Image 1: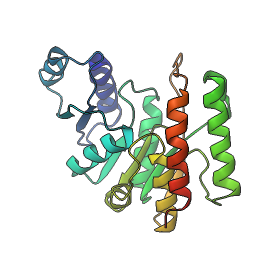
Image 2: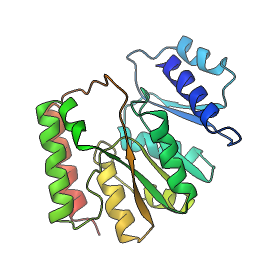
Image 3: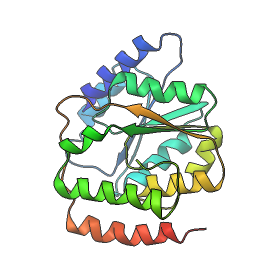
Length: 217
């Protein structure tokens, strides 16, 4: 994963020549495949990188808030450590923010569902239906792992409270209520991206978070 970060950053840097870039890597208490040697490789790569690390796993939502707190740039874009989206997709998020949107939300094409496990596909489609039919939100693809925001959008993002996977849904609901300017940006996954299945334990926990989001003011 350390070489994926380095390679992805170098490609973005070449595609966005003249734009100052910085990486904030958050290690959410991970022990699998995370060693001091890998962090050393990143630090010796001469990339502008800041590493935020803590020992207890808190969840993706919590981790991304820690990264946002550390960031001071006008625009901030987040994605997963394996960088599953194409470079043009990342640039599309940046261009959306540069054009004046407070929040840029990656939106995947319909063929995305052909690459994910059945349960995960079912959950995604159910969420889309809830967002459109129950919450009446203009955005239905909440779980795309590529999003960005400016400083105004960041303030909304830091108001989220869900620590794990449904922080995206909470963020979009809050953004709609706060009336920040949101725009969908079409994004594409890299070829051969493999998605993990969702466990029953995660489903049970996120069901409670889903109820919390529905009733949050």
